[in-house]
Length: 274
Image (cartoon, rainbow, N blue to C red; front, side, top):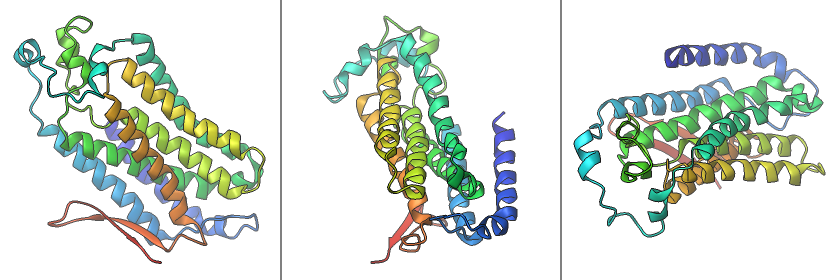
């Protein structure tokens, strides 16, 4: 399934690039500007980060049954995170999964708006780039950082199989929270830019802020993440969700640039022109 997604996303990008001239020729108001080189840079950044995260995961040392049985000391967990080891609510776990799907679908509802639908190629491309970079940031970080999930310390509520699953050392940061924040903030930002004086703006932003916050709470209540994982995921996701559309604005798009650092350097290069 993952291989199919990796192949389909570049195909979608190529289709969007092919239709960009037609989109730019429309008379409908569009606060964004698309440039092929720029979009390829953003998309490449997301691909590089996702692949880097995948490679990092393959090199991780698994959490063994012996460790799960003997390494349950919580003394090194910060006090503000400690309560997470006692959480095990399965209802919240299911809710977080369904809420994530809903959060990712919410931005696409904006296409029902006439002004945004007239610029559907722009809207979809911004959304795809946001999710690509957002998922890349999560995958790379969780691949490089080996932090155990809270549930690995909970010997009463979780089975040994659950506590030694392949992803139990990928607690930092919360992917559900981050990706949902990416999607919801991206959708709210696009709506706000197309309708800067809309009376619905407070409602749109309230939903955008609340949805990932609930998902973060649900991941904590399910024993999947510490509070610091959730807060970090929220900040990273919200930042990316807001930043990608902002980078494309006609009036501000050329001030801030982002690109992957290759070669000896690892990470992202950002610059801002005053």
